Image (tube, rainbow, N blue to C red; front, top):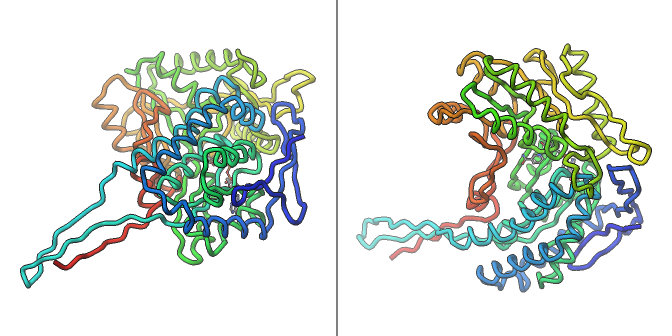
Length: 486
Ligand code: NAD
């Protein structure tokens, strides 16, 4: 049985308290291993190691040397691809066919993309006139922010964690990561990769545990943490913001969404169906950018519902290693309980269940897993909870619309503002509607097409700040202005 230990100052360690909890596989609820739960002592040790490492050999590296080191980390993840793949799929239950194309390659690429982007970013400089006529020069100078606490979720564990650790390290910071209690494996494995690549001890640290009154809270309230980057639920973000307010620590928040897809009658229907199938059902619907509200222009509404249903019928549920499978279980039985409660609520709220709505019979070997049926509803009121709240499961509600003005209003009628998808062959309309979306990310005729140099983040209650490309610089560095009197 596996044991997931903390990774502190370059070494795997257990908790002083001896406290552990179970890691179970959502495919069949089998026991994968035990996870050591960090108490205040382990979190303190990890943060202090990260603080000390800021003054060690890590700080002596040039930007170019750091880039080389981080490229090596990316290469090593790819060399150990199968181990990462196996670990990620056991923790999450997701199909190999998906994790091998998204989670692991992107998890590695995050170390390359940022170091190269940041290395080529200029700093600002202004000449100022002064009364003596000699002037002054202002030069912007960036230094690492310090110790960054990284709090990450379970839906894309390696990818979303390295999305933060990559730029944090590229900017010269040190990190303490608290991965989700559901998915400890790949973050733990990354410690070994850091050692293999020669990353100095204390630069990358991992503590395991839960949120409130556990490792997450101990880390975000630790006074030596200089900034906190978080991905997860909006309500957790609120708790972390409160913690960060003590000592005025900076935060970066990537939170929940209730993302709309807008399908105009002039779309390429094949592409719109293919894209909506992915955006609603890939990763069992557990993607923050995923679509849970679909608005379809009335002339093609019936056809769209019929074709999306057909797409769902063709999804193949199965074990991660089943090459034909493209649909796995939810991440845990606890999360299934939440998602299933919305399935029941949809019926109470008057939905027509077009397809799904239940728990599938997966046979004796898999029936203890967190399986759930992919589901489509129609007929719900715009103010129903199922249409307004983030479910984070493989489900969507489809509703017809009659005009551009109406659909813009419907799409924006939410507290969230993460992503929107627009399907139309009329580019002018696509752009016009995109500009009116109150979201941080908009795709026209695609979904999840990501260029890592672009800004990523949400509006409204979907987040604070932008990461990606050079945008993370504001968060991961301290910009100092040096004014030189000439
Ligand atoms: P979650 O908020 O329950 O947990 C995320 C992390 O926060 C976990 O590591 C958890 O242990 C920790 N945590 C919980 N309470 C804490 C506290 N009080 N103090 C410190 N840490 C605490 O989220 P989840 O269920 O793991 O992930 C699903 C959510 O993440 C969804 O809402 C989804 O939309 C969101 N998400 C957003 C993005 C994005 O980029 N915007 C990406 C992926 C997921």
